[in-house]
Length: 392
Image 1: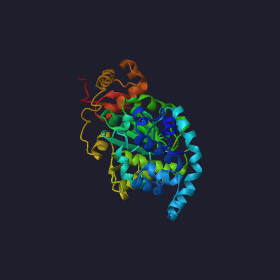
Image 2: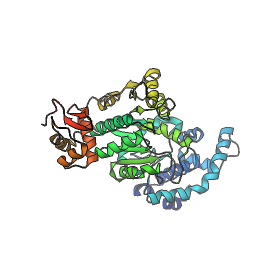
Image 3: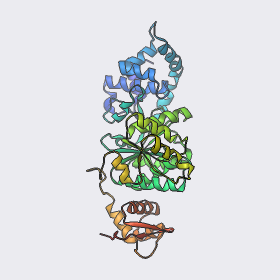
Image 4: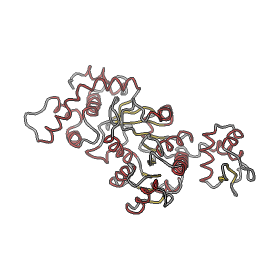
């Protein structure tokens, strides 16, 4: 491997970066070096991060390829960790190309600079599948996280929050896992909004497998799936914990929807608090162990109580929809659902969907949003038009 071999670097990055990057020698070196660093290090490697911050990704990598005769112990230990992985770089880049991934680095206009708050622990690059613009820092972003073993209550709240947020132009970030994460992504997709799933493994391995179809829908047009580790990387407990810092850093604020006393979601909350990001938690039944972690955040960490999408928007300083971004874009569909509701008869989601001419999943998300607006109400196993929720 040689950073003076421009043709070799260009050949390896074809299909992963814009053509303009391939034609710019400095940009080419920086992108290739960032990709290599993502292969050599584990997430959050502070020794590598400090060297890159001081020298740049390419010059720091030169010190790995041609190490100085003398170096401090931390650097020598780093070399022992990194050098055995140099042989994995070509396979990782080839896997990324097969997966249709895009490589973005801190020098790219599309880089989400909120990650820079991680300082020495900032990722060297991001591997992205889907719409890179989902990472646009100009869009307000809220992380919705919670238990994998979610209750029906938690899933319902996550659905309502996500649908209400994306309809107001807020991007929903989560971790792609079962439970609360999956419901947040699914509701965002169904409501026609933008969502970002941050994985602990490579973006070529949609994990967990049971959510592969959902993550495929995100990639297909509803947002992006991202990771800091290269393609081919297996998710491990350590990488999940490190992944959580990215979720917290990407988001303007974090809301924990449901979490047990020792839930991994509290790790994400801890990262959000350490970064000075607003933190919210959804209260649950006091008898529910699945909400004990949320109650702990409310009691011990000054988390704000969040019970609606409006509360979540207020958490990050938004009083209404984002001007010019997703503002009331689904008003026609909401009107169709309102037309399908009755003030007297209780109708199921399937019946509402049939009357509105929409699919049941879409109708479920929209009627939940109308409930948040006070225009629909749940009655037993169905829905009615709420008092004052008349069609306009």
